[in-house]
Image (cartoon, rainbow, N blue to C red; front, side, top):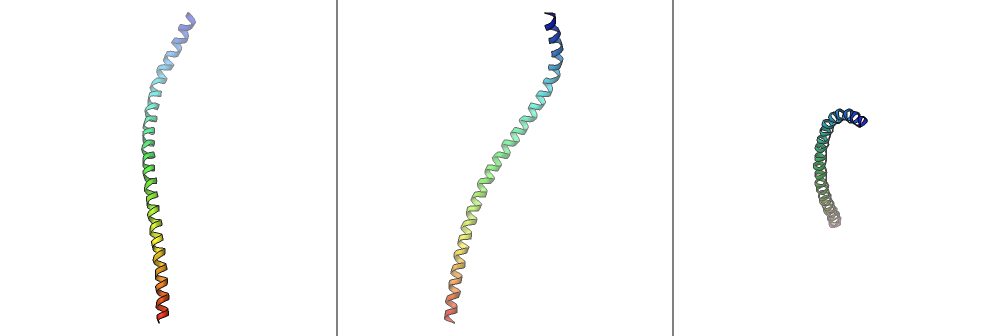
Length: 82
């Protein structure tokens, strides 16, 4: 029984020294995790917005190409009339 009391009396100060440090580390990790969750949500929103803007850009590019074709056609017709 004497050995166990010696081991326990040696471990108690170590545990008492380590526990507050572990609590601080846990608190910091909790803050980091919550910030990462917010960043992840914002990245998902930004990805959806980017996809929408890319679709709009493609639509506008297609419309511009169609207008270019119409302008070329009208230029050809004007040249034929002259």
